[in-house]
Length: 363
Image 1: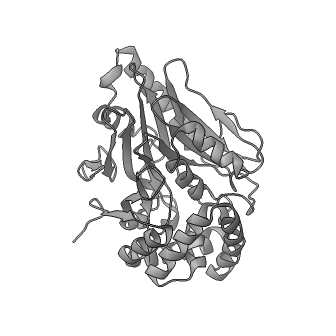
Image 2: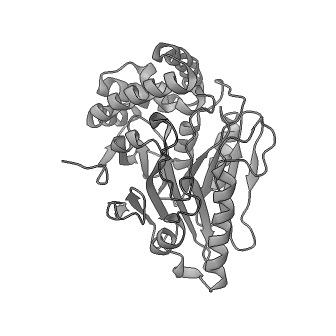
């Protein structure tokens, strides 16, 4: 039996429809579970029934048909393979937008430029524990685009990972308004980044489609460039590396002031300051070059429990209602050096003693 710390690995190949069908058939049970989980979450957090959620998904269906028809076709394939309606799958892929910021994925991301120039891109992804069993490691091979590897939720076409051109993505959720269903959902934007040949190509693609539907942060990097993309429907800001070659981010905007973003996650600024302190400590003792690796980052940064439960390595808060508690579900560290391109993934809270083994991408 596959445990939550030993997730399904899928290799999907072919046309958008074929990729979707393979995804839907292989993860049918997990996708149905996701629909049930998000149905409950929408009711609890947004006072929306699943039928009301599907009505919003209809708006995004029209948008996807115009802006990203190949990914709509893939979603249609997922729906057919999983024996669901396509609106169920669109709802999963637009869940961040439909919830209007009520879903608060608390995550910590970091990109670090090594002395030789290559970037190391890393993240703890924090979310509801009920979703953990429905995560999968997926590779996608499609004509005319780089082969990509990602960790994603069953039924969702784009998330956190990298491609064989060395373009990688991480994600921080932001709670801010407005939301515009005429623009690209953030999980679709992540997939578009993973289909790109460079960071600059990814930015160009998102801009050419008119931007994203909700406020989010994508930390996007390749061998030569890293940018913190603070994206919103009403304007974007791009954060460059600091003098030490670092970009760190949590769950609030640092420079983007185009949106209405009231304070909402008290631990976010604390985590960001802690991230800065920990990287400074490493710099002060001379960490550089190949010293910046997955073992170091997991041990020195991503297992950090300062300010629990809202720590870099998040722990469920027993004072919050059970259905709203979050914890770190996986850590990923991507080496974007073309000479040693790949990623290490650990499911569970790194450093807790209950995490899984180190898994490799590609596998």
